[in-house]
Amino acid sequence: MREKIVAGNWKMNTSIQEGKHLAEDILSGLDRVPEGVTLIVAPPFTHLFPIACLIGARKNPGLAAQNCADRNNGAFTGEVSSSMLASVPCQYVILGHSERRQYYGETNQILLDKIKLALDGGLRPIFCVGEVLSKRESNLHFQIVSSQLREVLCQLDPDEFRKVIVAYEPVWAIGTGKTATSGQAQEMHAFIRAFLAESFGELAESTPILYGGSCKPSNAAEIFAQRDVDGGLIGGASLKADDFLAIAGSFARP
Ligand code: 13P
Image (cartoon, rainbow, N blue to C red):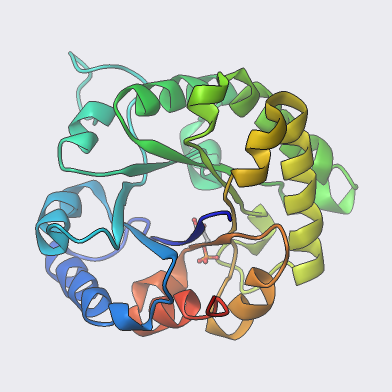
């Protein structure tokens, strides 16, 4: 059985105090999370350590960073390395988010370097792929996603690849209130799995593929019910503990 994961990407939101409150509210509602569902929170860098202290020895939620450096420790002012993140401790790092690609010029080559360093540092990457609206409208979405997969994940060796979580986030659905239909999500997730199977065979059957883009309590159940959708990467709705927990609760109980 594949892992079921609901991850909250807080992006650049909340003060440390607000973030700690949000984490506390999530921790106090963990009984709403069905058994077998892994919850992950991805607050800003500054919040990671205080939130790790709140989480303590619990397995759930896991802790993710939203980015890491493309270099090892050293003279790289302003950067945060994967080994620093692992020492928080974080278990995951989001890489390849469309906002990083779009606003910070992260190319597939940079992302490959980051993924390798994340894995070396002991973190599991949550690697995001997805097309902008114009590419979907010109029917190039499969082409875009396959090149993002080919140039990054397909360059890993199988032992590295087995630790990766994929997130399909159509850029046109991020923060727009416009969700992909469950049919569009399933179609792309099945495509991603089949594409990865060409390089990694059976391993792709156990790769968690999350959907992201305006996922909310009212649409999560239908999206999560799709065969190749293994959970969600949630932006806006993860900033409200109640909504985030309701989304996690949308998985049909086993
Ligand atoms: P929204 O859920 O706010 O659309 O954001 C999705 C996202 O970018 C998660 O990484």
